[in-house]
Image 1: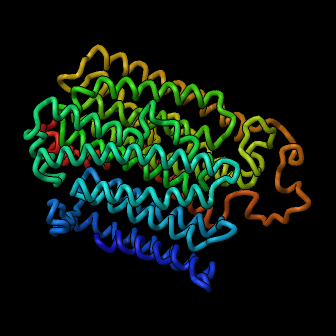
Image 2: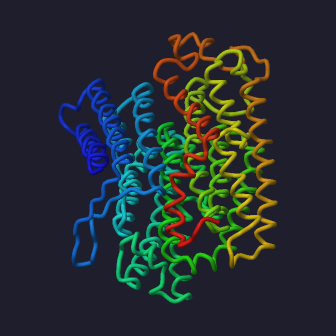
Image 3: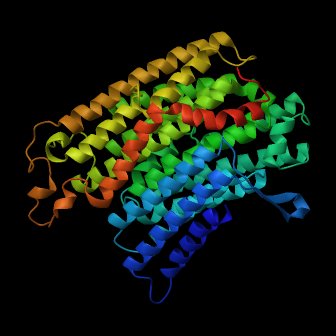
Length: 505
């Protein structure tokens, strides 16, 4: 368990430092070391998920902080997702490397993965916060140092401003919670369920946590940093941002708000539900007119995370289960789409949907297949990953937990279903333009094969080699989660029931 975290953190830090040495580590060496570290970390995560070890040692005794790590059914799927995504982004980074500072690039990827694993393993609220903040530093470096030169400065600045604000509010909420409860242990906080706090205190703490974590999810109207960050970030950065970082935000809501201050969260649940549905509809409408393909996928993430937050707002075992399943589903679907879009943007030298290009089905069938699966997953086609999370979310909102206004949540369920219709509309729009194409010739479309000044190897025309391996793994994951959602639900259900203090509903 400790090795799963330390290996990527130590190796990633060493690679970043190596670029500052008089003789930086060579590209081949850095690639081999980074890939070995990612695979070793994933293997350690696999062992951890089987053995379920627990580490609980005093750390900063003056404030009662402990080095407490553990695994349960709520964190296990997210740990597995992070480990797999970590291997894939490193592999993709090796196939499509940056032009300079190669060690820093791969090192930042590894540090993000290692700190994210620590976030999901943390059983101490303060340790959770520290691990969360470690992730943000290399993520900012990926945007600022390896992003799109035209937009990276503004995107990096917005990323810092929003995340620092969210971190400040989250820290205040955590400190208020732990001071009132007398412990920072997340297991103990879930067991006592905020009994040491009055309802008003719980509501204040929940509000601080929801705004702080809502910025990181992101929840409407705190979402505007996300499309800018995705647009500027390199492909691997966008994948980590969508598949890992956003999940840390919703995971924090589950642990700190739903589990530790349930009464306060219940009082704010109607507001959260309304904002979540506004995000679903807002994101869907923007996707209908967005011209940048990468930015469109980013806006679709706003809508999908709205479903996750609506499920949490609806409450109960079904709501939390739907949110956890939706988290994993969005993780694999968004990762697949950002890998595809990143590959297309490299080949097209842009991602403007108004530019006439040949359809992928004719010139790049492998990328076209991956795009079809990803967009079908995004529109929640039955049998694919996102379908179950969104359907269960709508059912949870239609029959919310006791204490929630049933009429309001009934309307929210209807509007969320309308958001699903919007998702189908923008997904089909993308497939019509990109997969089917407009019948343009290669030269008119800006196809790399028509550029006499650029030497293009055969593999760059369509996905092949390691890039195709990355896409294939995610295509299989989208299908597997859609066909076997009961596996994930069975893993998380006992711990969800325990956290909520419920019996099977």
